[in-house]
Image 1 (cartoon, rainbow, N blue to C red):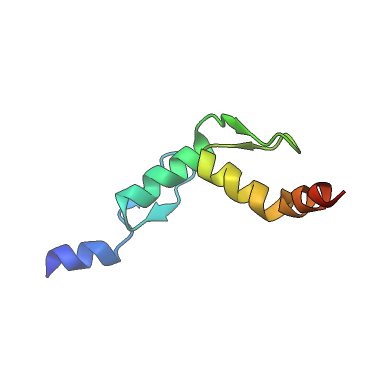
Image 2: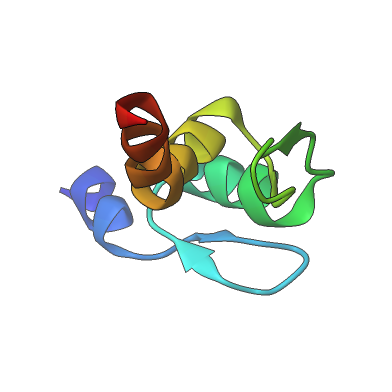
Length: 73
């Protein structure tokens, strides 16, 4: 039972911004995304991202219309 209660508490704290997370993997993702050097740049708008997935999501969300439009010309 105490192990289950540990999952409900936010015991993993970011050392840089003090944000709390229930899971260690969520804390690690947060630190990588928001506090580590960003190394993936969008070729269309030069915005930087900490991971390839975040950059891909950005391109799909903000630039996919431009790709479709260019392909139709």
